[in-house]
Image (cartoon, rainbow, N blue to C red):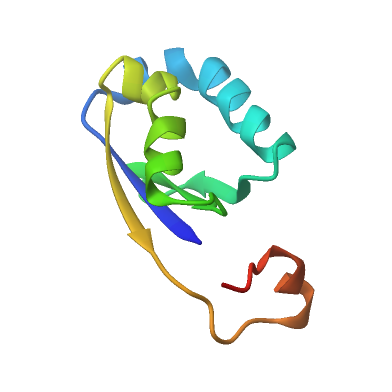
Length: 97
């Protein structure tokens, strides 16, 4: 499982222009089962995506599809973690390795 932390490196006005295409990107990967949750940071300096990709390499390929990445308006920090404790309602997202 991965946490992707996006940090904007462009004005909010430029970010706003890309929000519709970014949302399309997100929906594609929610439907594919790769994204679990996402949202913007507060204060609005970027966003967070919780992903369930098979590997860091797969996740890096997915990120390259993001309009924020394509238009170079955000930096991405990827943190991989292995959940050892979680709410029972979250169990369906956990892949045992």
